[in-house]
Image (tube, helix red, strand yellow):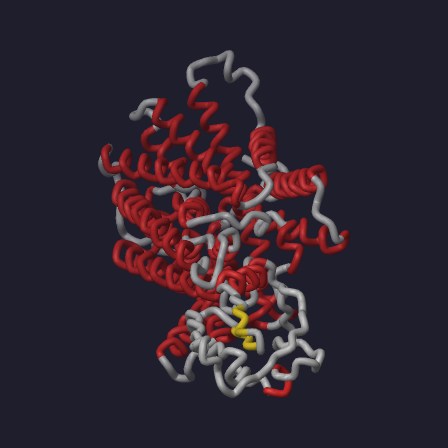
Length: 552
């Protein structure tokens, strides 16, 4: 409200204050009407006074000058003038800000309304830039980084580095888009990727486009983590017990190792909400950076493997070569994951008009992806330099480390690397399972109109763990489908954010942002279909032993 100028005049002069109140409403002593503006009540009781108006002041008493009332500072309102004086009613900015916060923190559109306070993603909103960095690191780096050198065996040095750099810049740009879109509506916080997709594309179309890739990416990643984590537990056990016959007399089967990993993950999953696993994400980020560093340092230290070649893999036909290249691009796309979680992470932060959540979120993401780049580039380049085309096609760099250096380096290093991989898999399981937990609890709370009890929440998470374990045992090949997973998740990472920006922000037609987002969005969708086709072709051409219910 702009500055309001009000003068308090005495009873000896004109009793009307210049704020637009009619004189008839404030000068009549017997009118019986309130002298205040409608909707405002005075704290003082109403009294009736008889006023004698004189035209000439007393010769002994000097007339009182009309004391001016200081004008209020901008941002405060309002001033009420009456016959008795002017009444200040100050509404501080922070009072209005409280209402603003309430609307943003408890969205009514696409954000779950009052249910947000009951769901694990938005149950706690006390996150900060550090939490953002921890969660982004944990979700953005992990076992998929161990598969990056496989892409170089197909693309070679030049195209491998170019593709990796282009994908890194592209996904960082779409991350920025999602962070900006989180609060694109002043009264709504889109704290889930699915809700933003519905707001951009419509209720039915958004659900159709985003629900399956999001759930497939979260659930498929958890299944792959069970496969890798259980297999790495077995490697650690064999490394520690090497040369000890009594220890290896009755080893656990692969299914039992998977079960052990799943039980550990389910116990850790009892932490109530996304903010409560910030420490788990920090541990997962540290372990991932550590084992990535150990692998590339060991590879460089021991020099090039005998017979290592850098000639790109040459399939039998041109069609097979094309699809192999597309599969390699899918592996690179799969290395940059976490876009299905960025809005969820930002939803754990407080947000007010002066301090929106996008500021600390972007700070945390920039720091996290700086560390991710420091880990991914040396790992991909140094490992490819050390082993060339001899990198195992199905198991990634962890098994290559045991294959090439199992006899050369100490068991302490091998055992430590295995333990770090297991801890990282357990940590990544928590953050990738959180959207699934959130959806299952949303189904319960929206039907029952009450929050999940501790036992219901425990049961939901145990159920998901059992389901993921069953799929890991029934379909143990999911750990080898990095290209296919990358192709399915590619629109979530590279295409949908561009289209959502166009739909919600409405950039100027034929402007720079309009061309950039349309171009990247269409390119992302085309690449997604081609990468999926290439991954399926590579699976058929190379062949994968299904081993249903017999994980090896």
